[in-house]
Amino acid sequence: MTKLGTPSAIMLDLDDTIVAFDILTDKCWEETLNEFSDELKVVGAKEFKRAILKRSSWFWGDKERHKQWRRDLPRARRNIVDLVLKDYSIENESLANCIADRYSAIKDEMLYLFPGAKETIEKIRDAGVKLALVTNGGSKSQRGKIERFGLSDLFDSVLIEEEQKIGKPEAEVYRRALKYLNSSPEESWMVGDNLEWDVLSPQSIGIKGVWVNTKNEDLDPAVHPYLTVKSLPEIERYLF
Image 1 (cartoon, rainbow, N blue to C red):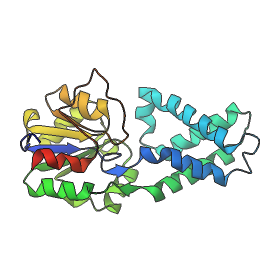
Image 2 (image 1 turned 60 degrees about the vertical axis):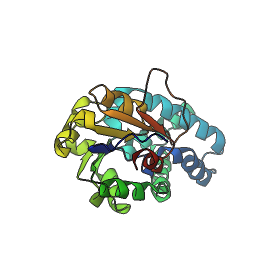
Image 3 (image 1 turned 90 degrees about the vertical axis):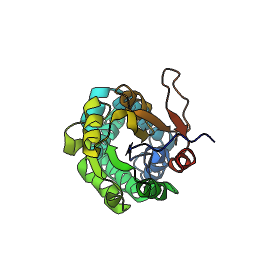
Image 4 (image 1 turned 120 degrees about the vertical axis):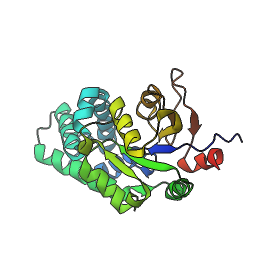
């Protein structure tokens, strides 16, 4: 195993890097819609789930809409479910809100730390590496996860999109993190599961992008991560 040397600073993503989030989507929708099987019997829970996932892909596929709504996921989910109901000629905003809110509650219950992720961060911190958490999304939801899983004391700086008024993949957010950490791009890593946000964009300004492929996705041939791992703890093999 080739050791890559210890960087001066590491910026870490939160969702699907440290905490399981999007990978829970399918299971959460299945459980949610099974609870509403009577209300959706005309459509069927399985068909409705397929429609939800298709609509969600369309909704989040637009970059400007993604940027606007990722700061308020509960409301975004309400909008998506309402659109799907209307696709089936069901005009029932109250039902849409109930389904979406139940999904949000179930997802919150299912969140969990990836095994060994917190311990790995502690080891990196104890090795003298400066750490920043750089995450998109709303302050309430992201702060909630940070506090719930006891992550706040592990980082020298926490940058949340809503609080910073800027988020990934804008280059300024990485530069801001580097400034807080007093580190240069060449001496720093950005570690996360999103190829554009955590690898391609930071590498455009000289930061080494480390891809944590927790979703077992295919690598875009146009993107060349400095390092690819399947889980955050795997990074230890290249550092220590």
